[in-house]
Image: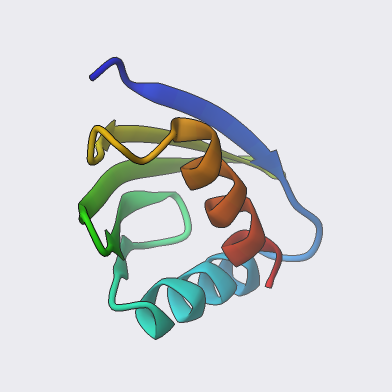
Length: 87
């Protein structure tokens, strides 16, 4: 799979934004591991795990999806991650 990269701009603090993402991922069986500068995310779908990394730069979080089930569109993953980050 080609890697899928996108950026999410946020307001407030990185800590609060990442806390929202962690809560959303954990509610669906996933996890966010890292700190306010970078880390990894794991999301669970019925057809397999989605794995990615994140880096915080100012008021932007750069996400790279590095592994996903073939049948799950990258656009769907991006949409869900954006929702988790926005709380």
